[in-house]
View (tube, rainbow, N blue to C red):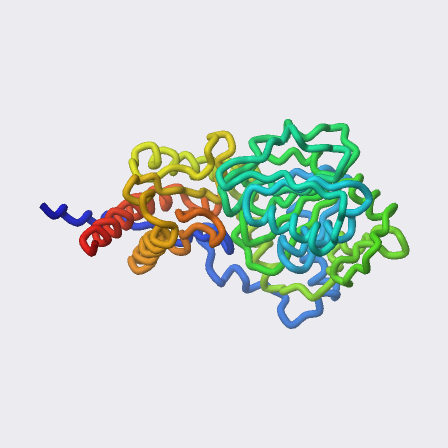
Amino acid sequence: MTASPPVKPARRPGNPCFSSGPCAKRPGWSPAALEGALVGRSHRAAAPKARLKEVIARSKALLGAPEDYRLAIVPGSDSGAVEMALWSMLGARGVDVLAWESFGKGWAKDITGQLRLNDARLLEADYGSLPDLGQVDWDCDVVFTWNGTTSGVRVPDGDWIPAERTGLAICDATSAVFAMDLPLDKLDVVTWSWQKALGGEAAHGMLLLSPRAVERLESYRPDWPLPKVFRMTRAGKLDEALFEGATINTPSMLCVEDALDALTWADSIGGRDALIARTTANLAAVDKWVAQTDWIDFLAAAPATRSPTSICLKVVDPWFEALGEPEQKAVTKAVVAALEREGVGYDLGAYRDAPPGFRIWGGATVETEDLEALLPWLDWAYRRTKAEEAAAA
């Protein structure tokens, strides 16, 4: 007897954008938000430079960064900010690199394959788990992602980072900042981009430095040449202008205006605490649905490590698990395509290097009611695809 096809849900998300980067714009956004952009102006002129400086000051305030930390707008998005830190600061002592998903593995590759540091150790875990944080040697510099964007696994807190440490804590926080409680006093380098938690536009990175990181820049010169876009010092001293809005390369004033709009929205709803609360509510909505749905589960094994932003899900249906990986990828691709055709959810596939599954952005720019509307559609699309595959077999 052939099973009846699943019935389409009646409710649709108001905003179907659930990509993990670039992420959904803030609620109510329209191009009108960019009308004040100082396009056609030099970014070195007084008014545009003041806008850049405002992004720095307001970002620092929203994050709650200590007064003596420095923040700069840098080229190349979050990746550019991380690379600036790696190329400028590493090599002074040994390095521990933590990797439990693709971006951490990418930083490890750069450290061992491009910088060719001999005294580098990789602490690695499979998708869904964390490395043993107790094995980290804090006499070394430590490079890690706070939140594994492609695995949905985050470090649960900062308790594993000692307040008294010799090495620098270099943290790629792009999918965690403004969404999770970061212990900034335990982090020496923090990087992010506008297009994650604030839903901004691409290509610009943010680089936050502790006084310990500044001391490293001023006391250590790496053996390799530094490209211009990585240089943060002049004559052995920190280039203070970089942290006052004098960017290394030309920024987009449209993107700057968009970043200011996102910061204004964040302040209007209650600041960092409100952003974290919205993100937490989104994870709770997914958690409730997963608990009620027999074919899906979180990729992150331990609840305390589950990301509330890049929410990664795996299929635990025995029928699916019996398929080979190419067939599994074909099924999840068909599910994602069905959601896109219906206009109810875009860009929901797992990252290309991750196990076959789904990834939903749950940051603060996503409305919880839109997530609650999406999830029945995901259930519908999976059951529909499974039925079609079974009928074709």
